[in-house]
Length: 449
Ligand SMILES: Cc1ncc(COP(=O)(O)O)c(C=O)c1O
Image 1 (cartoon, rainbow, N blue to C red):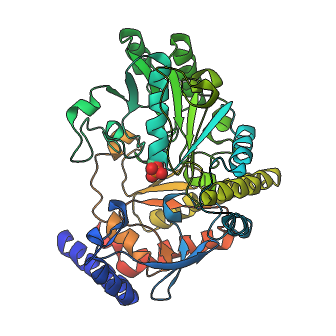
Image 2 (tube, protein in one colour):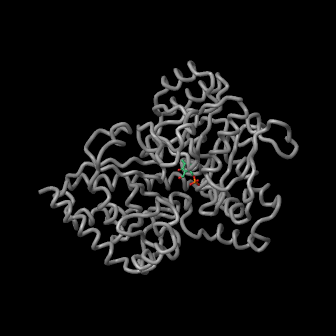
Image 3 (tube, helix red, strand yellow):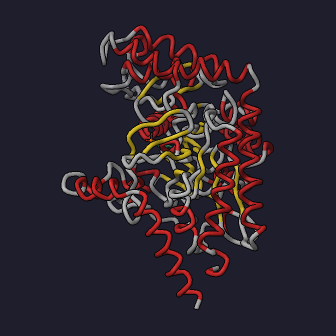
């Protein structure tokens, strides 16, 4: 009976989505002739076909059928200022006139100075293209600095595309999360449970070949399970005492948890940190920032010497990314001075409360983990914990998330993240909460529970 209800619900949701998006369907069919799977990245596909976008403005995004959505995808997080922030767009247009790619562009210095001002650990900075590349580089720097090999990585933490990080990225399974990752690429990766300081202490005491401990402070991929301040402080103390490099992957938390990211929020300064996404508000740029003593492991320029760490890249200082990052950091500094971080975090808390209330009023179990503009929805009555939640089935989650699109809320139904930006208004938050309620009523989710 329940299965029948679920199949009926799924059918209704898919029909509503397809009715609203016929041009996306056509474009998907065309795209599949040339583009693998019709998309430019695995995460961009969802059933029955993805929505294709034409443009965005502020908190809104528009698809090829002319539908307007409140954008709760934020292009996976970079759009911390929403779409087309005027100061960022103007800076990019202006700077592009100088050339797409210059050698040692003047802009790179200003960009590094701003990052140095904002990020507590940023005694020295290098730019790079993506979060994945930056993570690859910092681990190499940590190994070069310590002359040790292993890294401690935590279950549920995602650090991009390098083979050594593609293990247990969203669950407790100590297996590669992708085909094509040779087992030997994971030989130097030690997996530990996050939020368990004794596990880290034991490992550091028994294994003298640990170069670095790497972490995404909020554990975004695993579903947003942030640690306590005490855990972070103790992690800092343990690593410092043993000469192990502490690496914060701030690709998501950077500029979001606070202007100075997780370091500022927790008051804990790592040795190295990585920035991407929010750094350039959609422009393509990532950064490595760190303590000078550790960053000096890198060769090049005045530091050139034998056996130094190699770190370089053709597009590391492209004009568009640098211009976008400079403008973004200036805007974020202003927003911080104006108290807008507090208001932004207040809107995130309101979304969590409103969405949870919408489900509970209708008798449906729910938890929404709120990670400063990354909010993860779980449809279950079970007490919240990463270990429990990463293993549960949520058969109605996908149709529920897809049903939000025809209601005017854009989200990827494959990952239950609601991503907010400074561009989202109080009215947007109320509209999202209303869309959740009307979707639950329209499709009688309770009956299929
Ligand atoms: C915490 C974290 N680290 C690293 C990355 C990789 O960044 P990129 O996709 O820019 O390579 C991501 C991407 O989502 C991320 O969320």
